[in-house]
Image 1 (cartoon, rainbow over the protein chains, first blue to last red):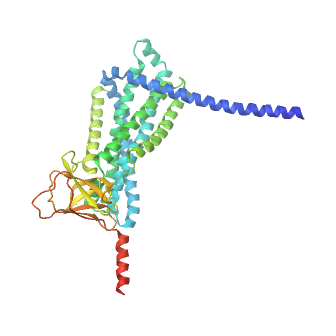
Image 2: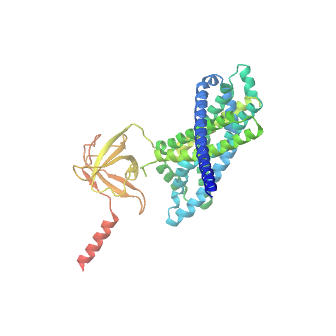
Length: 276
Length: 152
């Protein structure tokens, strides 16, 4: 009897130790990975001068990251605007202030929805493609081959993608917002018949250029940096197997989506605090 | 992909993007009526500002002539000191009447300026002589009930 209880006690202690060890291992692992990522991004920044000297590479990446995302951004912007217009009208009409729909649509798009949804779409459309391309180049040893030919793969492949993403993101977010406002205009003014003059004038008196629009652009720039940093790091860090590349692509989309939402909260708390 | 085709589409992309930013500034925002730098400040002491907020418009005859840039409580006079930033294009006489008004029944509050007949104009940093506080609905109802009771 005492023997078994002593045995059970040791098993319990072993079990608890294992749990603690696993937690510790995971913590150290994630911190190590974060350090790796920071080091990698620093490396990309240091080597970007070489890629600025060859703007062709950046233009090619802007084509794949920005131009190819145009359709999805424009169409979803339009539909988000249409829905915002419908729902906003539905609620505001109860208070007899349906001319404020323009303000509602414009402010929610310019401040929040434009940068955030454009960022989420950009992460899943362009970010995943960047990760897959870099990961596959690594898996097929193209990156090592570049290194053998004294071509720095970070300067040649990674840095142009990084800068193209940062450049494209604010433009895409602005297009998203404009399409959304146009969608709101379509549904409230053209379809429902809210007065056009008050729609635009209320919007213009409520939306401040420096406070709302510039802050929205700053937000989308931040998202661009975060998305492309995550995408290129995951691609470069992917295990050189088919499963590894697919896992890295998934991680890019999940991590950057969560990062966008979290960062958006922090940025909003700093930008739009205190003033009505 | 041919180089010229790619250049063309990237050019289109950048132009649409810049166009979108311009539309945001001009059509959605108030960049067209935005004056940076060329404005002067006036101060006004108000007994009660009601729901007036920073960035609220300052209107004269319904035209926006400036914005509220700061609101603070004065410990010397125990009232609210409102700082207004008025566009340089507009000048107001010394005896201009500043009052806090509401657009519509539930609308936002703004400052209305009613110019007087004085020859001298208000200069940068000067105060309005006459101000009218915001109408507080509760006070008005209270006064109405009080008058009613006194009349009976």
